[in-house]
Image (cartoon, rainbow, N blue to C red; front, side):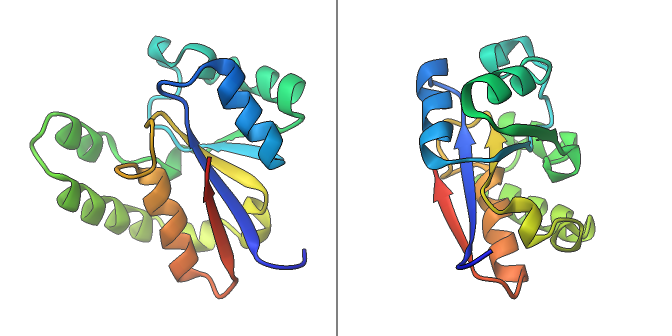
Length: 149
């Protein structure tokens, strides 16, 4: 690998399948790493865990990997969605969680190069996929370029 590690992030909410898979293909994503806690929800439509490997292989020529340890815990996610904690508390609790899970040592730069972290959130602004990517960027001694699709 020459140059920085390229790590993409994407959410599917509010996106058509054509736009979603088109962005992945145009970016040259080689693998989608699903970071959702609830990846099998019927609300996920075309992004359901059981269907994504097929769509990614056929439409993008990309692999699929589900990594629940990258998702927020049920307690943190529900507290945020229910309004019991704000974004700042969510961010702090999620970073503590992935630090406790030792994610910076479980994942490697080579493993995420040209991969894309997937979440349901429409944008990266208030989403754990951005926090995760930035956490790795700060933890690793390898240059990491984060591209939000």
